[in-house]
Image (cartoon, rainbow, N blue to C red; front, side, top):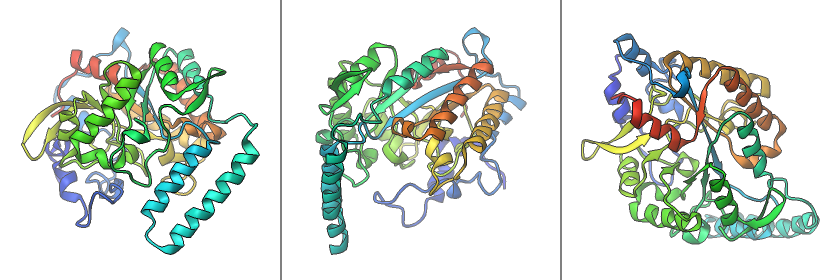
Length: 377
């Protein structure tokens, strides 16, 4: 089968391959529905390879670096031992419970949460180590994007998978007790980017996205330009236009939950396309290539061990280096409690340093693209 690369990048194939029962309630279909999968092309940036074969030029990176790495984090949970956040989650489960059994199960969970809170009340929360991410990246001369939830009170319609923390909740950052808002401002002050990680139902609602964007911007104190949908919940037929209408400049949602690789055959940022209006949009996609959970979750996805996961990171990095593109990684901060997940991240940072890659945030990659990239489409 001949794949038209322009149709691939515009999302035509992805829209055609959506299952007939796809709805706002369904988790977005993953790699098995991708047109590149049957041909075994998910691990190759085939669009970029063809572009270079036809005389195109590799992107230019600062100081002549051979390729780029974009580091990102989705902040799905800020605390492990927060009774308030646990009760909010149970409340959401009760509201969405479809049977009496599910309701009873949620109520039993409340009792377990109360018991757990009593056990952990004097313990240091294992997730309150956000400064370790900054320290590890700084040692490699890198900065990243932290995608934060806008706060539960900023969400109009809630889904049971949504995050449960509020921006006024307490955390510990660099041994100082503070609110999530204060931590966000400090991360921003140190030069890292803050992006929006919005709710499940925001993917097709520009007004809802504007509201959530405004909530996080109020906490931060300035504009937010980058977004990644929670759970990668995204509809190629409508979400690009919704993101653009909400005022975002960069998105980094388009990757996989259960695999890694090049969902659109490229590791070059490109301008997204409005399939309904049949026009290119100003919002730019920084494609997600590797997600921690896709590789290392023992219950779904690739189910890899530490060493095998790192080998995959190197394999994909080599493919990106050949075309001089961008390797975007997603590592969730709440997975710092998993030694093998944290180790793969540290090993990857050291490997990128050895490979002389340029490393930046979503915003930095996007700004660099505007300065020197060609439009893949």
